[in-house]
Image (cartoon, rainbow, N blue to C red; front, side, top):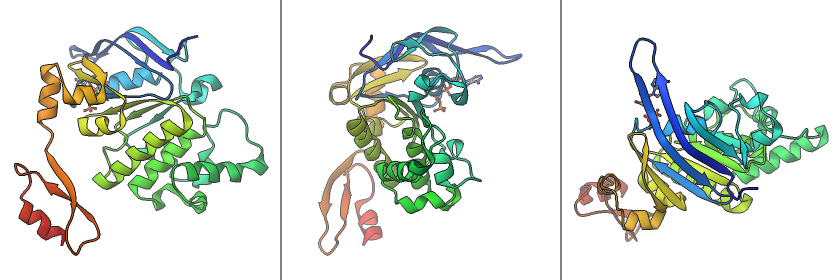
Length: 285
Ligand SMILES: Nc1ncnc2c1ncn2[C@@H]1O[C@H](COP(=O)(O)OP(=O)(O)OP(=O)(O)O)[C@@H](O)[C@H]1O
């Protein structure tokens, strides 16, 4: 029995386009996620993150290499066809609509992913429990996905994933479609769920500052390879690979949060080299 909930060993993914050249999107990546651990995978668009995520979730088979979930080989199968044990691996995507049917109420679809049958008389309580876990009111159960904001829909998609009582969540750009405030809330929510429920998480994003905020360990991907991996703070403070240094240097500097006189809300002070401070303060007053 392994201590890791996910093990990716020497994964290669080659996409073959008909008529075009083959693209090697992932070139020999090895990665592990332990229970209760958030591993962040960061890299720019096109570096192979989603190709790796699809393999890690068992949506696609790798061209070569091994994927083990809870110590056993993960067979690439559609979620519905998977044995209950493999449904403990859940995914959260950029577009929450992908996992929510627009034609069904939230209550009628939230339990679709449950790995054990839930008696009819317990279903309402289970729906309420899941909604509460993601910070939504039980009344949300009678509404349809279109009646929620983007951030709330992502909460619902997370609640739906939690119905399976997952031991691993693969979150592929889960906040990319959201505004900065909703993104921060969802990241906080995912972090607290990991702590509370003890599941592992592979958190994939092009945004290193987001990954730093949530991940215990960060892996940096460049051109299909992991070029650096380590505890997030250490990687942030003392990056060793030139590409990691470039990623960090590209992040706009944000100054300390301070209170403006006469305003109740915290205001983030733009760094001297960044945004025009006068314009920003004027806009918030
Ligand atoms: N189905 C496919 N067929 C052919 N090439 C593909 C396919 N999917 C991805 N690719 C190519 O593989 C490379 C990696 O793509 P991938 O989507 O994995 O990267 P990414 O880091 O997730 O980028 P993004 O954040 O933009 O989605 C790219 O060159 C892409 O064009």
